[in-house]
Length: 170
Image (cartoon, rainbow, N blue to C red):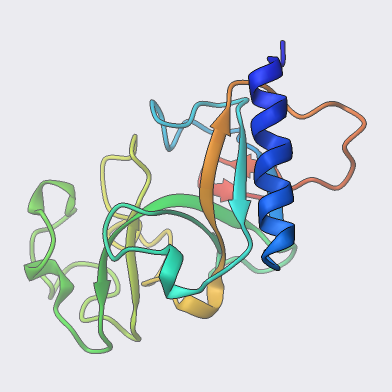
């Protein structure tokens, strides 16, 4: 059940975003990769922006294009952990408890093939770059930044709305 508070907040966020020229997106999450912060079936609002003002090197929840996906465009909703520069050994800069192999020589996408964000789903055991889910996320591949999560699903009449998959949104 959608609460009045949720509806009012949604109207406020959309109105504010539109009034300052930002595009707002609604996405329904269909995977548990961001649990417990964002659960399967919840709806997230995002600002459609890759502007640095809205993204911190560590802690922002972003939606980005799956650059390894061939075929229909796919999106991933995960948290930023670190911003790596091209050629950087990012393994030395991040907490090692989410690394697959503990060494740049054996980690995927290390050294960083290009500048970008190291990311991880909160419920995932390893960084996306450790498990080859994604190379460092380029700023141009960022669709938007998470604003708010609601504990309700989008109505059936909402057509063509991207939905999250195990590793992101399709």
